[in-house]
Length: 356
Image (cartoon, rainbow, N blue to C red; front, side, top):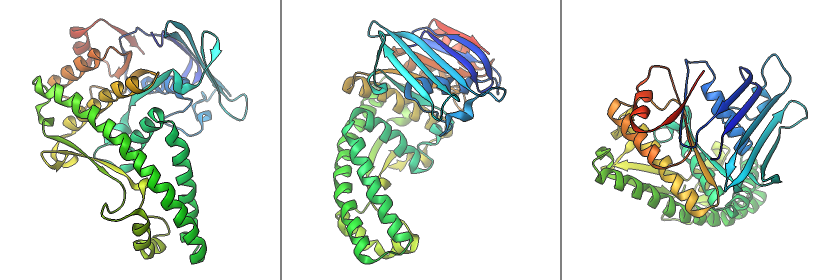
């Protein structure tokens, strides 16, 4: 199994903690403030090298100390897996991932699919949340897009600087041309990946609704908005929006404004579904991502869901737990003691419960 044990030292509120996980469903139970989300954060740092809460992981150091150590052990591809991360000893966090004692790239082994508080605003919240989720997947599945994205961001930063500081038209034109060229290529790559992304979601949800579950999603459609008027080229849109951009001090059109729109019965899902129904949709999007990642990359997925039971009625909770279990992936869930989630998992599978 990917993760068998995780060790935390001086991390958040934990002075020292050892956690054992099973290969299937794992449920971390405890009251608010007991460190459930911090455990998911620690696992995410071990796998990806990043915290989903902080840019600087030094913030994660227990207040009584000046460093933290994290370790993870498991088995992957029938090989010994070792993960480690530490911060506080040097200027940057140090992280290492090994298979059979050989250091490997983080993208080659594990991909953490993580559903946390902000994730639940992905559909009815700011487009940045949808773009973050989409870009992370695209970068992993199509690594070549990372360099292209960085080239576009460099040109975007320079054009915005010209707009904000009212540079000459000549210099602005140079960066507008660079932005147009890089942006067109990036947009083509974004749309190419969207077709795969959409197909996986549609297939997943169609299979489920046809079996009689979550029928409120039977009219789901997913649309791609490229970030500028589809009737115009990016070059034309940049020219047409120039006066507006000068006033704003930034570039208002381009693939950095790309968006994914979810509709049910031809209405935006954000206005047509309840909070609980939106959560079901988001969870199913993440479940569909598992097949996408594992079909197109070598990585194994670990699914982590914080506070699964919130905003779900008993029927939807049991149905979604069943779908999670059917993926066969190692899953780490969190919940508050006494919630329906414990009963739902007990009824459907053997699982490991971790009490904090």
